[in-house]
Structures are given as C-alpha cells and as structure tokens.
Image (cartoon, rainbow, N blue to C red; front, side, top):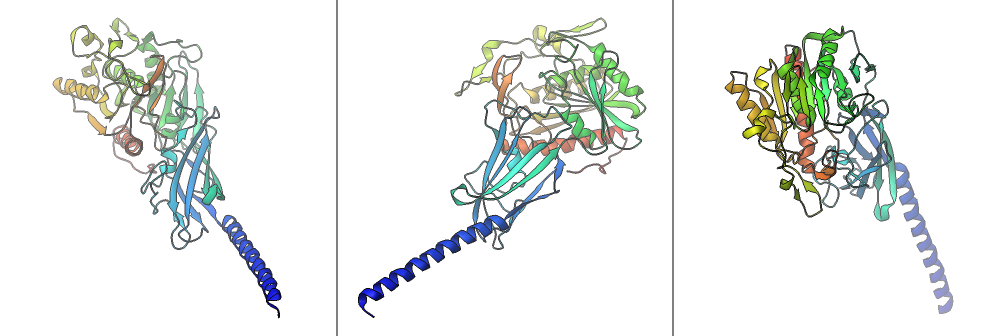
Length: 451
C-alpha cells in the first residue's frame, strides 16, 4: 500500500474513532441525565415545618454538581438557593451525609440548607404564606458542567395537615380563623397574634394546629371592618377572643395560651396582665412596653412608648437601623408604657433573637423577668439565640434580613445571620411546643412532635 493510501486510511480511521468517542460521550451524558433522579422523603409532599430528606441517585461517581432549589410565593416572586456538592463513590448524593462545598448559598453539612438559605429575586421581600390551603411548590434541579440539567424533582411543602379543620370566625367583633386538630378533643387552646403587618396571618397558627393545638389566628387591624391603622386598640376586643376560646367545646380548659410575635408580643403581655383565663404566654421578640398605639381597657389607658427618630442609623446600603429608636420604659414619663405584668396569673416564655434590630428584645425580656420576680411571681423562661434576627419564624423559612416597615415607612434592618437564624427557628419552634404542652396539658407530651 502506498504511503498516500496509508495516510488516507489513517485519516478515515481517525475520523471514525473521533466520531465514536463523541457519540460515546454524548451517550454517557444522556444516560447520566436520564438515570439521575431527585428523591424526596417524604415523597410528594410534606409539612413546611418538617424536615425534608433530599437525595440524588444515579450520578457519575465523584461527579461535582450544583443543586438549585426554587419556589415562587403567591405574588410570583422567585426565591432560590444554590449549593455545590460532589457525588460519592457510588454516584449518590445524600444531603444528610454530604457537606455542601464552598461557593454556594451555604456550605457544610446542612440537610435543609437549600430551603433556609433561599433569597428572593426582588429585594426587601419576605417569604409569607397567605393561603394556607395551598402549598408552596419546591423545585430542585441537579446541574452538571455548563449548567446542564441532569435531573429535576418537585415537591409540595404544605401548611394544612389532613384532617385539620380551618374555620373562619366572625362572631361578635371577632375576625379570626380557628384551626382544630383531627379528633374529638378537647385540645389545648392558643390565640396567635402577629406583628404590625396587619390583616389576618394564618400560617403559624395553622402549622401549630398540625401538632395538636387548637389555634385561633386573630386579626386586630387592617382587616375587614377592624381599625384601618395602628392608632388605638381596645383590650375588650381581645377579651372577646379569649372568652370565645374558653367557651368553645373543643378547647381544653381551664385556661388558654397566648403566642405573639413583635407587636403581637406586647399585646399578649397586656392580655395576660388584664384578662382572666390565660394560663401561659409565649412571646417572640416582643416588648414589655406598649408600643406604636394607645391601649385602652375599661378605665385604664396605656400610652405607646415614646420614640426619638434622631436615633435612626442608616447603614452602607441605605437601610434604616431602628434598634435604638424606642425610649427606655424604665425612665421618666415612658414608665407609663410599661405593661403591668405583675398582674398576670400566667407563666411566661420569652424567645429572643440577640441580633434583633427592630428593638431591644433581650432588654425587654430581662426587664420583664426582673419585674415579675420583684413582685413575687415565678421566674419566666428566657431563651436567647445569638445570631437570630427579629423574624424568628417556624422552621425552614428563609431569613428576611431587611424589608419595608409599615410604621416607619421605609426599609429597615431586621437582623440575623442566616445559618444561626435557621438553627434558632428550629429550636425555638420546639421550645414553644414543649412549653405549651407542658403547661396546657398539665404534663409534657411529645407524641405530636415531629421535629
């Protein structure tokens, strides 16, 4: 064979080998994409406050991948996170055993990191669930090199457990929603009061009801025919809600509990101080002074704690830090705003985020404790969480570090370090459940606890 013929034959063989190699690579990539799959446990759906196991099967051994998690809120805002991982020697990626590598939304062994580290594509947006009867649709994608999608899975994160009843309440002046666990009852009853956002917030009460509590999510302004703004509140309205719960045949007596966040916290303290039938009270980053609106009950008037807007600080991003704005309720005329908690016949739990930038939650909890003990009352439980901000939510809600404040009229810092804040939410949720079970049931009952 001539040299020219040999050269032509070699070129032909070379082209065939290259083509075969390309076909093999394409076939392998296709097989990888087809074989890889995202597995959720529980499969299909889970409650939002419950852990979700995520694994990826069928990957190439030791393959580096990016996991992207996303969901949209009810206004269409996209929340997403990304984490870098490497499959094990068997081509398996188990988030409960595989630490995330540096470079993503989080790193380290964080089985639920894809959820709590989510950030919105629109700044100053907090993830809020308004319709508890519909789930959030979580999507998890497995991305290879050049962002090639190797696998994708979807999962519903729900808020209402099967069998839990959601009952709108429009009795007298009460504007609320009652959530009743499955079964005949009676159940320990709790009124849930949210902060300054207004409207009727149901998601926390709904999630609590899944764990065996009869929950009344109570609106108190900016909802239907309730007051439109936060100028003045009458405790008689809240008294109606307490009496409604005490008389309800599904509610286990002799008393009920209160759960409040932020402004809802000081309303709960006022309720416990003046109203009968309240056995236990838990507040999350609340105040021991009445804030933002005048509070009236019969012939008693508690003015709102004074403020000094000159104490607002602006950070490098133009956000307002209002942590020092409120006056000291222990000094001068502002002492009139201090809630007389010594009148209460309730046990207290104070959940505190030590990085709360809305106000000085730890100071308020400490002063409430001092005041109670000075009047011969039982020492309350105070649980402080370093790195936790103002919005301590049920587990796995992503941190909202800043958003618009309705009363301030501009974006403010809420505080919080994502990883520490996420851990605080899990533990605080457990502590709240344990506290209410212990004191409303008369004993500690962990049967409903799923965390």
